[in-house]
Length: 622
Image (cartoon, rainbow, N blue to C red; front, side, top):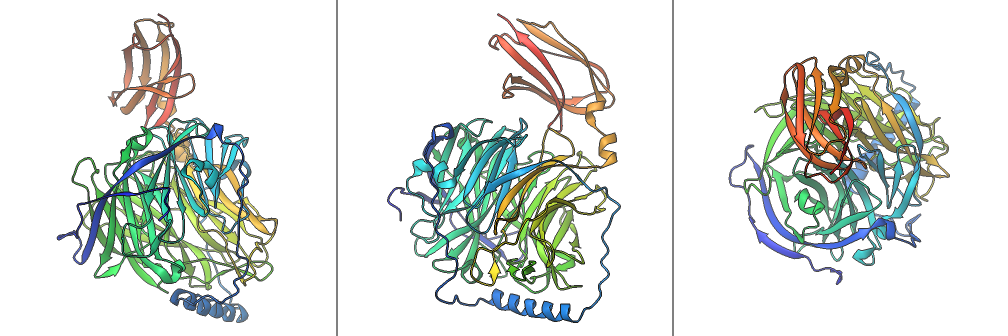
C-alpha cells in the first residue's frame, strides 16, 4: 500500500442480506471512514509536464480470454457476411426532428489511448471536460481557462503515476462539480479519487477524498471503470474489481456500488463515511458493470436506480434493475433487485472497421449510460446488429420502474453503412409526460474516419436521423497490434436551465490518434417549444427597488405551477432558496425580507422544474 495514505476502515454493517426483493439475490455492505485528503486551489497550480508512457506493442502475447475468443469468432463471421455481399435493408425512423448543432469546438487532446470522454456544464456556462488522463475548463464560447493532467490536478495527494478513467458531473441543486478518477492498477495503490468543487467556479478550490479501490484485505485486486450519478443528497460511484496483473476481460471479480454523502464533500468535512455494496450476486453468479441512472430534469431522491446486463454473452435478454433505497443518514439504506426480460435481445459485437482496415475495439455489451425521469429509465449500451453483423447502439426504456414488474422495450440503433459504439444518453424533455432524450455515440466505417454523432428520441419514442457532430480527420493508429483502442465512453449532459439543450463531448480521429470534440446541441421538438414554461409566467415589476426592508414582485401564471423563488448574487451563486410550492393561475404577489442581505446587487429568480423562467435584478441598500 502506498505509504502516503493510510485508509481508515470501519467495518460496520458487514454481512449478506437475508431477505431480498428478488429470490436468489444476495449482497454485502461495508462502511468505511475516508479522511479529507487535500484542498487544492486550481488557480495556484503551476508546472504540469504530464509525462506519459504507453505500450505500443507487447513483447509477449497476452492470454486470450473467453470474451476475446468470442470476438475473434464474431470478426470472422462478419468477414464472411461482407464477402457474401448480402444486401440488407436498414430502416431508420425519421418521424422525430434531427437535433441542431449550435456551438462546437475542439476539446481535450490526449497522447494516451483510449479517448474516454465525459463532460459537465453549470447553469452559469462553465464547462469541465475530461478525457483519458486530463481535464480542461472552458466557458460556453469555447475559451479554455485551464488545462491540467489528473495527476497535476490532484498534486497534493503525492506522486500519482497511473491516473485514468475520469468522470465529471454537475450538481444542479448545489451548483457544484464533482470529478472522480482512478489511480493504480494493482492492490498496492488502487484508489478512487473524488474531488468536490467548493463553489460553482471549477478553476478555484476543490476538496479531495481518496476511497480505497480494494476493501478486501486478502485479495490482490484493483478498481476499474467508474460510473457516477447524483441524487438530491448523495453521490453514487460504481466500479469493477479486477485481479492484479490481469486485464478486465479475464480478471473481473465483482462490482462495487459506493454511496457517498455529497454535502459532506462540498463542506470539506474532516471525514466521509461512504457505504459500499459488494458481493452482488443473482443465483450465485456475480452481477457486473452496474450503471447508475442520472437525474432527468434535475436530481431525484432519496433512492437511486441502476441498470446492468450480462454483457459478455453472445445473445441475452436479461436486464437487472438495482435500487438503493434511502440515504446513509437515514440508517435504512439497502439494495434491492428486479430481474426483467427485454423484448429485444442484446449481445457481444464484432470490432469496428476503419478506412485503413485496422479494427477498433468495441469491448462488451455493458450499459454505458442511463438517466431517469417520469418513473422511466432510459439506458444505452453497445450491442450487435444481427441483421448485418455490425456494432450498433442498444437503446432501452424501462417504464413504471417503481412497479413490482416494470415494462421494458429495446431498440437497436444501427446503420447499413456505419459502425456505432460507446453511446451516452441524457434527458432533454420538459417534465411530466415528456420522455425525450438525446443520444450521442461514436461512429466509423471502412470509408469514414472515426467521428461523433448525435440523435434525438422524442416524447413518444420516435427516433430522428443522426446528426454528425464532428467528422474524423484520420484513422486511429497508435498501437502496433491489429486492434486499436477506440474509447470506453462518451459524455452528454442536459443544460439544466435551458429547456431542450444539451452539451456533449466525444472522440474523433486526429493526428493518427484521437482528440475530443465539444458541442452544444438543440432539440427541435416543436411540442417542447409550444410548452415553453417561460411563456406561462409573466412578471410586472419588482418594488421597491432599491430596497432596505421588504421587496415585492408581482407575477401572473397562465396555469397552476410548482414555482421556486431563489436569491442569487451578482456572480450567479445561490444566496438563499426562499420558497418552493404550487402557485395558482392568475395574478400573484410574492414578497420577502432583505434586512439580512448585505448592500449590493442581487437577482430574484423564478424557477419551474429547475429551469429559470424569470430573473429580476434588485438592489439592497442599508
